[in-house]
Length: 379
Image 1 (cartoon, rainbow, N blue to C red):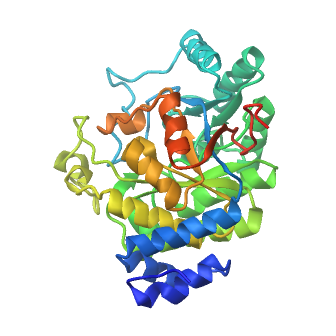
Image 2: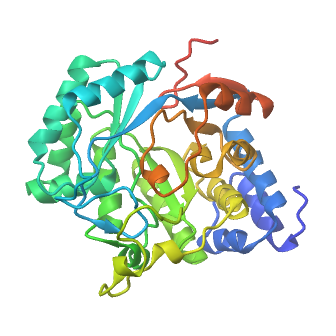
């Protein structure tokens, strides 16, 4: 039995450690607890049961934002630019291929390809983009296009969602990132975004991709306008989807980073928009809330095999500590990252540091691919 200061959560922790499924009410009770040590011990015990191997993993990829043009308005995003803005861009093939070659030269096997909801690029443009990348770099997996982007492709092309996904898969799309999930509760999504897919659409993209044999990750950005009940609702929707499809390989959560870098932040960003939120005024939650929420995620998401640490928003020390709060993976070296960095959070780790974080935690570092297969050649 795990010793807990908050004895009210003891039976729930024992239940989760034993492999039994938690209810929403039990998950909420864990999130309401402040017994970080007990939550971490339980989450670590579950991780040890699911991953008894002596390894903890990482991957090497590059987050390439092919464009920053976006028709949606997310009050927390400092990266996007509207059509016609002087800082709006679409990468040329030469720049794109140079970035991919640099990634390959550093031992990377994957490109995380994401952009905004560009209102003028047709589906054929994305197909050509994928074909060109695969022709030049056939060994590189394209982990591309978040569910909001794919829903946007579906709407702008006026084609069935599965048709869009099948065409992109045939053009070279290898797997889907779980970006744009934020909180999968429509009240929250409507409060912090405009012109972006709601909960059912985000989930349907994931389900449709899984139906055609694809794999994807799942995410949560928390610590803004959501309630604890809504955090659990988000986790529950992911768990339900995984029960149905089995297509999620991993879950990654991170804390909201208050934006400061673009001229439309603050009250001007939400003036005249009913329910809008000045996200720059929302206080950021810290490492305590991050570790607690990740631990509860590990306890609640009993059918998602892997949990990634979020050192990009938390830094190397908390990222390493996350390996004892439910994470079995340190995530990506992330040679390039633009979206979180634009919000003012700029943690960068070298490959040596990531491997050292794993080694100092008592594990053997192993490089993996998006499917959590070891690719470093070690026995």
